[in-house]
Length: 342
Image (cartoon, rainbow, N blue to C red):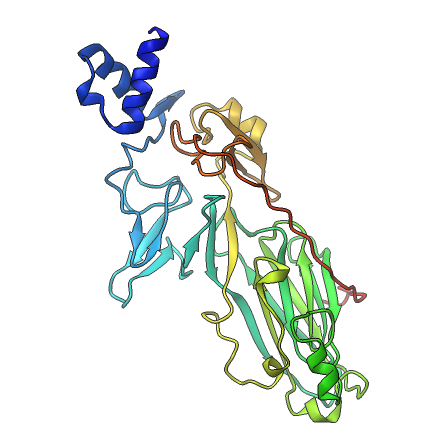
């Protein structure tokens, strides 16, 4: 096929105008629009082959590799739309996990209601309060650079990887009887009424230890009646702005008001990119893409750096306009954690 015909056919593909081309050009255009066959019958879908697939559930939109119905999702990325609720509820298949959004830049990332704990505490003695979280599906992890926020007075928090018992981070909160001092720290989460832990890598399950020592230096009498900790995980340090009123409000923390947690799903048919790319029958990444190993096994695909609005899981999906890369940065504090005895 000569250069002029290639240009014509790509124009057909982009403009859905193959019918106007010559018969030979139609054949070339249809070939370009067809799914990409990789090895022994495995098919990377095209935009045309996915055209019949649902792309919304209520007001929640989604795209491949997620999908609903036969031929509309990559294995491990199936969604279910529950139309018995009002509005309809989008769920990760075979789980009770609600999906409230999908990342527009990283298509294997979904947003779920915030992972959150509201913990009543006892001021009379030092007690460890333990909470767990486990990924709802194989291959899904909390994205790196997520932030765990702790709201309360005199709370010592330690986050551990449940697989390795490695300390992921720690922080401590304290409060003052002086309301003016407290309000000076509104908007911050650096220890006065609020502290945070940055999740530095993908995390598929964790356990959280909270201590609440009976100490007037960190929990003055005016705040002892609260005796609770509110914990939640959001995408970045900037996802939540602390307000002193959050310490005393009994209703502010619900998952619809504080945003959601981001989970990233890895392609799990192979453990690493080299193994995946060698297995053409199942390799998920289309042309003009990069492959990245997932921390807990599996891999992700992404379009080359100069493309920010493409779909690396769809044939010829990596085309678009260059965009701007984002850099995440944060401040955090440490509290020494000990996992022994658990």
